Amino acid sequence: MLAGTLPAIVPRTLNHADDACQHGQRMDFLKLIEQKRDGGELSPEAIADAVTAFADGSVPDYQMAAFLMAVQFQGMTLAETRALTLAMRDSGAVLEFPDDDRPIVDKHSTGGVGDKVSLPLAPLLACLGYRVPMISGRGLGITGGTLDKLESIPGFTTQLSAEQFVGQVQDIGVALGGQTAEIAPADKALYALRDVTGTVPSVPLITASILSKKLAENLDALVMDVKFGAAAFMRTRDDARALAKSIVNLATECGVQTTALLTDMDTPIGRAAGNWLEVKESIACLEGDGPADLKELVIACAAQLPGCDTERAAAELASGRPREKFNELLAAQGADLAAFETKLKQDTTAPVVREFPASGKGYLATCDARVIGEVVRDLGGGRQTKEAKIQPDVGLDQMLKPGEAIDRPLCRIHARTEADADMAAERLAGAFDITDEKTGPFEPYL
Ligand code: URA
Image 1: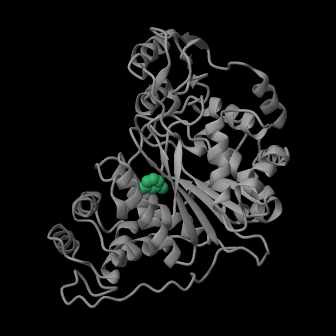
Image 2: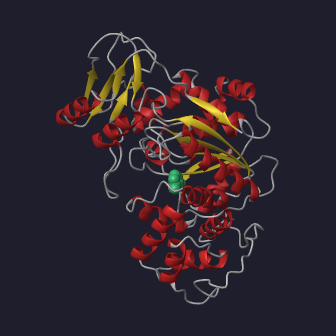
Image 3: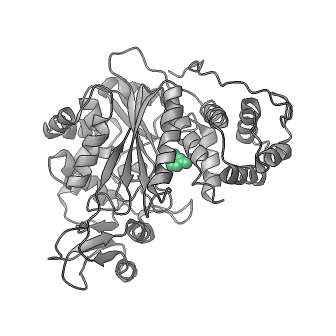
């Protein structure tokens, strides 16, 4: 099932006399770092060798960290970004799907708080006649991860081999799994290093990280949801636009029809943040219920794909078929459906649940996604260290949205202990701001 040869995307060759190495020979990594530090442009061969050397362990973390920091400050040209992306993709396998009329598509978000869009969207796209090989990530910093959310479902496994992954996509149209050692392993190693060296918010590094995985899925089309705001890597709309352009241009050049939405991440998506609480909200969305902003974003993402539009996506979501497809997906990936349905019927599953009252009357102006993300992470819904174990049932729900009248508690806190709930309550006071203004949820780009 794995491609022996890779799609024909041939990096443009630059002839740099001063390359840090002759392609294929042992490289002088220090020279590469210095070239990038001083603003030089690296050849595709030098970049490919650097990725290979790092992936096989011959470049130590401290040198790669210095290189990443040089990229963070100096940036990369399109040719360099392309070479980095392709080298990272080629550190693993490219999925190969049998010929089929169904286009192979995916959606990727740059990361948000309460961002559960992939959960309703993946089965919706399968019902719309696409094949959806969705390789997702874990929570990172304050942003949640699709894999952590799915693993709050009893029995569900995200560990699929590439062969199982392709087989399931062919059979039921959708698979949701993690990045295995087979898919872009260089990205996994580089990402872990970036996460602890302050080198995440770099346009070329994010572009290469995301597209190495997406190109390994062998996609026909991709929709990107690029976040900006308080809880996003890209704080401003302009930075998010630059990232969107970088990803759209490179993916398009590599043969993947790609568009991007720029969406606000000042406010959490929906009313719930926390792994299981977000699964519940996703099911509500699939059952024609749930928050309007979540539904709107799910439909907007689907409508960006070739052959789809808003009306078609909305009608399919309302049909109930994607809800059934979700259960089909769960069963295919080992979930205990009876336990899942029982858990869904429970109002709360965390040991301590508490309402968080408002301090005054009026309208909610802002709900700070950064504070909400930090609180959910510190309740145990995310990780402070790589080894930390996720608590599936903690988080916040019933959050009021900006613009709504304050006629009930601002949210509910779901915690493991009373002390954790106290910690959350204390910090949540700084998350909600009571005035009159309202922010729009998102705006299409391209
Ligand atoms: N998501 C990724 O997969 N990589 C990044 O660098 C940022 C977000």
